[in-house]
Length: 331
Image (cartoon, rainbow, N blue to C red):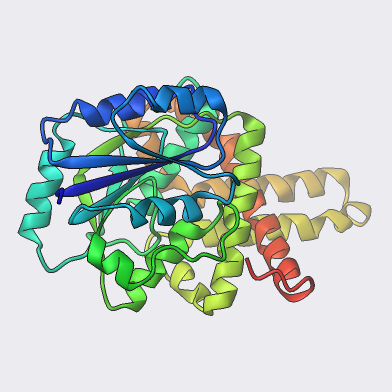
């Protein structure tokens, strides 16, 4: 029996998975096994994985991350399972530090690592989304997390099997992480943030991948909240007020568009500029965080992506409602 079973699902990640697996095997802590799960990935990526000492499971269909993780967990012999995405890189001391933390809290069952906000990315899109997650999801003011991010999580094997893993009804990757987090909370357990485990996330995103990813995840989350009837949990998140306010401001902007035929052009533009300024003002603390972590220039560069992100929130809200109630698509 191992202390850790590290489950790494992957799909066409040939550009980064070698660095990810190499970072695991460079660990000073050696009491682990690695289980890699090909979610019907391409041959090039599988050939890279075969160079490492892992238990490779090859699936014939692409059913998403939740399914791949569940399959990998079936073979896990470790006391704790680490679910690690194929675009995550850890440092050689992380596993040792995690073990010490687990021994410190033996009664706790689930732990969440955070992203390293100091990672330098060439893409401003990736920079924006990573900083957004660091600020809102991994807020420094909280010890326990509700909105789980599955890129790197640690969970007791026996508990994972008790709650029957990730929801099998997810047939593609969208809100399976958040749903699994609430499943843990439903069993009267908490998810502790491992504040000193800052992993490096290297997503391969373009602008259109960013758009598709946000639409998929937030639409899935909206339907998840409708299923669980717990959307107030998200709204009441202590640091989430700026996002809610921003959504309301942008929704107001969209409703004002018909007034272009009533108001003068100058008044219409002025009113929208005031609303836009208000939107960014509500996000002042986030922008100040970006300034501290990066620079003023990065602050300026992310402004359009923050605007687009808020717009996508509205689209996903409406899309989720429409799919859930009109088309009866619950997932």
